[in-house]
Amino acid sequence: MLAELVSVRTEDHVLLHGALFEPDTSGPVAVLLTHGGWGNFYTGLGRFLPGMLAKNGIACLSFNNRGHDYGTASDGEPSIGLQRELFEDSPKDIAAGLSLLKERKYHQIVLIGHSYGAAKMAYAQRLAPDPDVKAAVFCSPAALMRDTWKFYLDVPYEEAVQEVTRMVAAGQGEKFVVFRHHGPSPIICTAQTFLSVWGPNPAQDMCTFIQELSMPLLVTVCRREQICMDYSRAVYERAVNSHPRNFIVLPRGDHFYRGVEVSLAEAILDWLDTVGLR
Image (cartoon, rainbow, N blue to C red; front, side):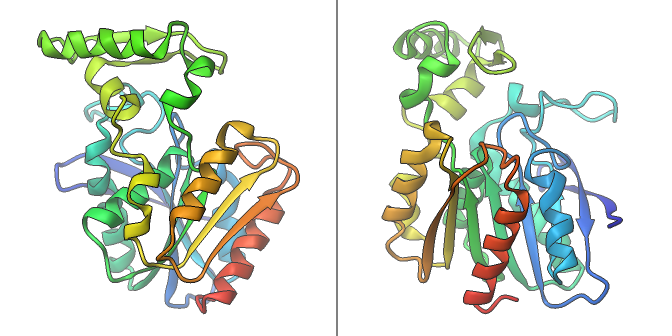
């Protein structure tokens, strides 16, 4: 299915790119999909989910938030990415994506956030609830660094926090730090970004505020991704004011839902039926 490449600016003038997939006959419902850390609109869930939704009558905008990749330098815009972003700016990105969908006359919107992107969407809806957002799907909400640091850091978590805190206090918040880990690439970011995204008191800890959201909620996770299993379940269990809510564990797949693409799409479509959004 062909998609329309789109761009939108946030209120603080950050340019975000994405792809809008629309069915042949558009209904009133659209999905706003955003990626997790180091991701972008055309990989991960953005690689397969938008087309599957559109083929089943649901428009989907898969878009970059400002924390995509390690930034982009080739479009003449400031390079932000996960190396320089601040989590507290996330609501500006979500608002820009919602505005684009509303300009296209969609006013029943479902948020789908993957991994770290789930926290961004929840945080945005917490700070400025949008009445056109009717439901949310959080796919494998990312566990906190303080609980998973052995996978990401080559030094103890407390040591990393002390170092970046010292740098910020000394006016060196824009200086970069590098931490090796077991994943495909090291953590490379400014000291202030590390504190904002992975610090000891993260604003993105969904477990501290998810009970403030009252929209229908679906949380999904794959059985093999133990690093996110407990946190995803905790998010679901604490979302006591989300009605209805459901927690689905797919028996196969990984953090990026490889091998269970169809199963994830079917689970989301079935749930949208349940809440009357399809």
